[in-house]
Image (cartoon, helix red, strand yellow):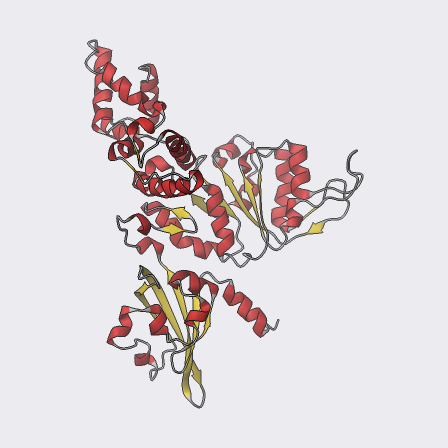
Length: 440
């Protein structure tokens, strides 16, 4: 199959790496969309400039590293560097320079690809310098590892299963994968599989033909058909029924389905991203989820850590949410007091980032000044703290000695149950059970 120049340029525009093409004078003649995002230079600003002018790589200060290889037999130069954006922000990147050689005149230009390396970012304490990757904010090491592989995952058509507790931002990751993929220009459709009964969910996914049921006055395409050429995000996939799982398996495996009331299969080209907060492996053991469907959906798995396991992200998220709500409410709030932030960092967030967002919105309603303080936070955040104060020193029986040890561990670790359980040498679920017995 021949690829036209227009098709080739379209492919370059959808790549997850920045791409620059330079002539023999090292002047930029092509600059793709991802290069704009990484360097913060607009295409029209970059064209005609030298690659050194735009990339501002320290490697170039001691002489262009590529010039040393022009006379050598090497055609590809790989190295890591720190790129300086238009605003002066330092970004670790991987550079690949592919030399273009003319059989007669020799070196005639090159193709530079730039890959951002988010896990190697340097973090600063200034408000605007926290790292945001595709609208996902984190400095947690496990999250940064996901950020680093996300562009590679996105450039394939492999099915992706995103697992994580409710409120961890699974939809944000699904959106990021679509936006970084070659299907970016195609539709991105999503559906919550737990929100609809089986029959309605089936018609939403696969559509129906005229006369399929009483109110079917005309053909209606389903999401699989509407997402042709793009991505379909199936949220809460663990809640679909075994009957519907069979039909979904065929659609994922064969790329075709039969609408309700239809007799002919419909062929589609759709990438599937699914998400769940349930343990699908356990559901398979209980024969409530098909193993063959699981392996079709789980070509690549992304496990998102809950917020309680990444407390270093809480200050970043708080700053981000303050900016967000300041605009939404027209408020003058600028920051959160250290004692209020300390309360949040001791809390375990069963509702994850979504709960943190609700807490900040609550605080914005109550706070009339420029700083969110402890008394602006929801009262339920202080439940454990008050119980600890009331119970400490009251126990005298043998059984109460265990309670005292638990209370001491909780106080030492500021209410963090995971750390307290580790110090006590018991499983976290055991600690929860003992706390329930104690009335906490």
